[in-house]
Image (cartoon, rainbow, N blue to C red; front, top):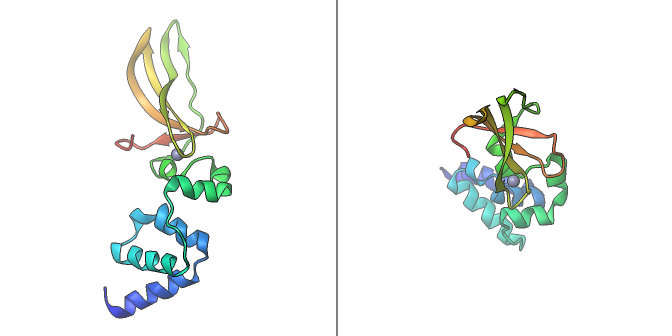
Length: 145
Ligand SMILES: [Zn+2]
């Protein structure tokens, strides 16, 4: 990364408000090059901002969690989908089965959609369910559980 590029990034970081800067450092860090993150961290330090964990970020900015019902980590690992419906006839069909996995930040839960033949035989999909709205499901991407 050359000096001009670094300068450009530095200017952009200066334009961010405190929340946007902390959001970048805390929640969006995987999307940025290490050099850009280092510049963001310098900017935060010059403003005397404490770098937050994801959990602390949502304590400080609760509105952001309330608007979607999911934290950034849970949003990243899943996508919007209609509420899945279980259906079964004489024990054969699909069933939603909650798992114990609860996010420590947004408290969303994981539910699995199983194909059942009397008992569950095959997992078909995995979802995150909002803690505030039990009808709000997001499907977890394969390999991101
Ligand atoms: Zn979460």
